[in-house]
Length: 358
Image 1 (tube, rainbow, N blue to C red):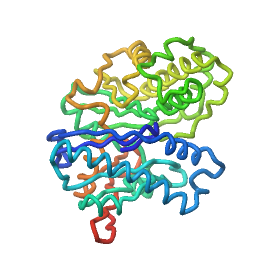
Image 2 (cartoon, rainbow, N blue to C red; image 1 turned 90 degrees about the vertical axis):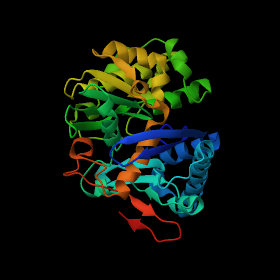
Image 3 (cartoon, rainbow, N blue to C red; image 1 turned 45 degrees about the vertical axis):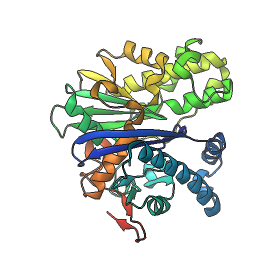
């Protein structure tokens, strides 16, 4: 899994039957080189974005991304001594627009399948979009599997490049999910631009600044937050240019508070819960965590309390989704993407065989 924060590739080896999570066997992370991060950000920022990319440019980026995924996969295989029977390959999202029924992930699943010698499931989002869904979020069914270990109803808060929420009810089919707002993407972009670091480690830089509440309040008046779910976001949905009027530490402090308030505001659209489980890289940001703990009225815990490595939850989720897709089980649902009925998804690349749509 490589997410919208553009930090690198997470890989996870999972034992699962597509219903239950039997065991988590190993994990690996391979960072993106700065040159690739800059190239991807430039594509997203340019006029026309990915839609203006030439086939040569697209293939070059896809090849670089795939090589890093191969490295991550090999690292997990070397660590565990296990060759997987199936691979889930999400690819790098560079464009997501449900209104156009388009979600573009860069990567070469055929090459991945040929090199690893196993079937590779990819293009997870398109079938949902084709059936009227948002194409995101897709991780909620994995959250639902993990919620079997928790007191329900409960809420999963994933703080990745974008934040998203999953409400898991007391019944197995009780599932509501949607993208909550911006998260690590603007925090990382600000930190890189103003402090020359890849991210705000531990939230230490934000802790030195002052929160400008008027900026937060104005941002939260965006129409996205008033819209009912289902709904999903692209990395470029929001404009943060007005924050450049703030001093560097104040800007980061304000953005960090904004991320937390957007999450809690979005959670108010959901039924009450007994607890909140935080996953994704953003849970390491202590300033952000402090905001979340102050704003929520129920206990906020790391997802590790459920026996999961929160840094690799999304990678595990796409392994889980790959198995479900391979078995033609649903991967998206009315309560998560807004699709009219549960649908499966994905395309399977078989080694030395033509691609087969699942």
